[in-house]
Amino acid sequence: MGNKNKNNDENDTEMYVDIDLDDGKVTCQIVTIFECNGRDYIALLPLDKKGENKDGEVWIYRHNEDKDGNPSLEYIDDTDEYEAASDAFDEYLDNEEFNDIV
Image (cartoon, rainbow, N blue to C red; front, side, top):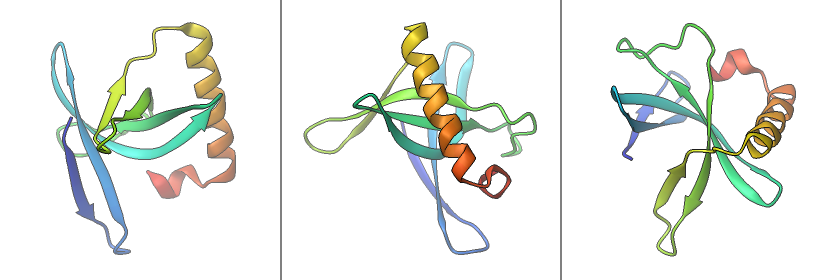
């Protein structure tokens, strides 16, 4: 997992992460890290080769940090856990302007 920083027009730092999948590497913009049921999760916006996300698809992973603060992502294979994390992310979206994030 690698991080990239990119400054946008408002001088805010956008964070990116590369995800290695079976069919290649995908760069994702980090939307947010949030908590649900005592665990941390991360919402990622997968980007195409042009750096765009046209369909609004968001990926959610379990987010952990080791004792040195190094982040790691874990695939969520439990349906109930994924649904709870997805609901928590939906609540986040209710409080934010998703179009401003994208």
